[in-house]
Length: 133
Length: 291
Image (cartoon, rainbow over all chains, first blue to last red):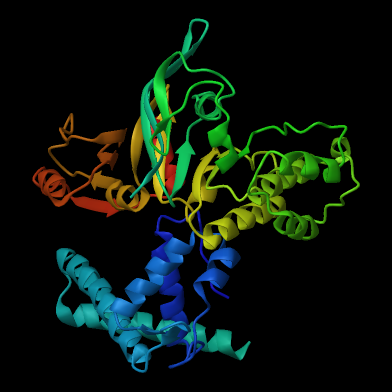
C-alpha cells in the first residue's frame, strides 16, 4: 500500500512519485498494469486529489507511466529501466560528494577505493546475516 | 478563475482589543484554502464575520461579486459552515435536525444525508444531547455536505478529536473535493493535517494575513539553511527574508523566504566551511512565520 508522511519536509506529490518508483523497481508494479485511481489514492491517503493528479502528471511526463483515456494510468514498458537509470544517477551524486570529502581529508584514490570496498563487504555481510534469519 | 469570496479592508475590534486589522482576502472557486493561525489570532472572528454571525467594524464582503450586507441570508444557502462548537438544538433528534435543515436549503440532498448517517453509524432517533463531541462534529459535517454547498467553511473542526475520528472526518472532506467544484476554507491549528490537502496557504497573525499564497510555491521557496564557519564568523548575516535565525558558536541556522540562487551565492561568498539547504514541513513553515 502506498504511504505518505504528512510530517515530512518532502512535498506529498514527491512522496507519491517516490513510492510508485520504488514499487516499480521492486517489481510490485509491473509494466502495463494499472495504478490505483486518483480517487482511491486521495481518499486512502486523505490528500487533495489535485496532489495525486500532479504526481501522476509528472510521472507521465518523465515516462514512467502512461494514461489510457477514460481508464486511468498504467505502468510504462520501460519504466523499470528508467527507475534504475535514475537511481544510478542519484547514487553517483552521493559517491561524488563522498569522494570530494575524502579528497579534502587528503586520502589518495587507492585508499578511498580500499575504504569503499571494506564498506561494501561489511554491508553485504550484514545483509547476508539478515537474509538468513 | 472566478472568485467565490472577496474581503476588503476588514477591521474588527472587541472593546480595546483590535482582532482583525485592515484584512483583505480573495478566495477562488474550486480551491482548498488553509487558514492557519495560533489560538486567539482571529481565525474564528474572521469566519464569523464571513458567516454574518457578527458585524465587521469596517470593510466590505463580496460573495460571487455581490456585496453582502450584515443580516443578509441569501448567500448562506450556498455555504456549508462547520463551527468550532456544535450549534444544534440539543433537544432535537437527528431526524428532526435533518428535517429542520432541509427546510432552509433548496439544494438539500436527503440521500447524501442518509448515506453519511450509515457511514458514521448515527441513528436517526438519537437526541443530539446524547452525542459525543466527535459524533456531533460528524453530524455537523454531514449536515453541511447534505446541503450540497458550493463553499465549505470549516472552523478548526478536528481539534480535540481522536485520530481515527479526525481521519473519518477528513475523508468526508476529501470525498467532497472529489465530487468537484467545492471551494473550501479550512481553519485549523492542527497544521500538519493540511499538508497534502491545501492548495493555498493563508497565515493569520496578530490580526493580519502575513502570508497569502499558493502552497506549492511557498513549500518550494521556504528553506532552512545551515551554515558552519571555521574562520571569519560573520557577526550579522545581511539577507532579505530571514524568518528565523539561530546562532550556536560557529553555526548559523536560518529559515529564509523566498529562497533563491542569488541568496545562496551571497551566503557562499562569506566562505562558510559548509552550507546545507533543506525544505521544511508545513508545520515548520507555519512556525517560522509566526515566531
